[in-house]
Length: 445
Ligand code: HEM
Image (cartoon, rainbow, N blue to C red; front, side, top):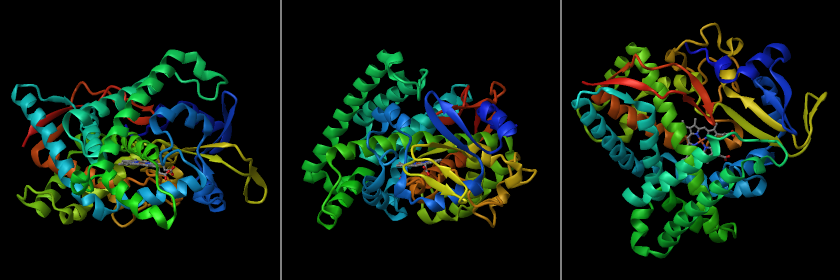
C-alpha cells in the first residue's frame, strides 16, 4: 500500500530502471539533472555553498505571483540577507506565543466536526478540513489577523494557487506562458490584489505603534523586529515589498505542507490503529487532563515525533527538492555539472529505496526512528523531508509545533477509521496529496 514511487512518479520510476539513479531529462528546452543517489548529492553539495545554489529560472518565472522574491526563490547574497532576517523568527522560543493561535483555530475545526457528527454524519474529508485550518493558522500566525481580513487574503492566496497549478503549465517550453494567456493574466491580477492587501497590513503595522506589542507575537511582528535590529548592523533592511513576498512565501510554503504531514499521519493512524492507541496513551500520560497546551509536554511527545518522521518519509509533503547550478560543479574530478543545469532531487524515490532502508522500506514502522534521527537510513542524505544544507526548510520548528498541537487535540477527542469511500491514490499536485481527498470515519471518544 505504501509503495508509492511508481504511482506518483511513473516516468522517473521507469527511467530509473533503464538509466540508473542519475540521468538527464528535458522539460521543453531546459535540461534537468535527475538525482536519486544520496552519495552523488553529498559529493555535489560539499562543492557548493548554500548561497551559491540557484533555484531553476523556469520555476521562478512560473511561480512569481506566489513567492515573488521571498526566501524560497532568492539567490546569492540576497538569500543570505533574507535568511539572516527571517530565520530567528522561527526559533522555538519565538514560536511559543503562536501555540494559542494554533489551538484556537484547531478547536474551531473540532467544533464543526462535532456538529457534523452529532447530526449523524461521521464521514469527514479530513484533508480538506485540515488544509483550510492550516491556512487560517498560517494567516493568523504570519500576519496576526483574525476573521474577515485574514480569510480574504487566505482565500485569494488559495485561488491563486488553484489558477497556477490546476491548469496545464508549459514549463520550459519557449513562449509557454502565452499558451495560457488568460490564466497568466488572471494570476497576475490576483497576485497584485494580494500584494495590495498585504502592503496595507504591513504599512498599518509599521505606522501603528498601539499594535506593536500585540504584533510582535506573530511572524510579521518578529520579522519587523528583526528588521529593525538588522538596520545599522548590515546597513540594509528588508523593504516593505520584500516583507510582502515573505508573508506570501510563508503562506504557500507553510500551510499545505504541514496540513499534509498531519493528514497523511491521520491516514496512517487510521490504517495502523495500534499506533493511534499508543499516541493517545502517550498524550494522556504526559498531559493528563490538562486542557492547556504546555510547550514542555509537546517536547516530551517522543512517539509522536517518530510517527511524524515516518509519515513524512513514506508520504513527503514536498516530494522533490530543486536547485540550479550557478557555476560548473566538479564531482569526483571526472564529472562536471555545467553551470545553468537544473537539478531535480527525487525525495519520494530516495525515501522508498530498499538499498537505503532495507526490505521493510515500504512498511509503516515509526520505531525505526527510536534511536536514530535518520531512521536507520544507511546514508545521511537519503532522508530529506525538509531539504538539505543551508537552504533546509526555515519553518520546520513551526511545523513540528503545529503538528504536535493539532494531533494532541484531535487524538484526545476523536478516534479515526478509514472510510469505505477512501481510494488510495497519492499524486503530485505541487505537493504530495491524496487525489480523492481523505474521507475518514471520525468518532468521539
Ligand atoms: C511538514 C511541513 C513542511 C515541509 C515538509 C517543508 C519542506 C520544505 C522543503 C523540502 C524545502 C526546500 C529545502 C531545500 O531546498 O533544501 C523547504 C523550504 C522552505 N520552507 Fe518548508 N516545509 C514545511 C513547513 C514549512 C513552514 C511551516 C514554513 C513557514 C511558515 C516553511 C517555509 C519554508 C521556506 C521559507 C523555505 C525556503 C528556505 C530557503 O530557501 O532558505 N516551511 N520546506
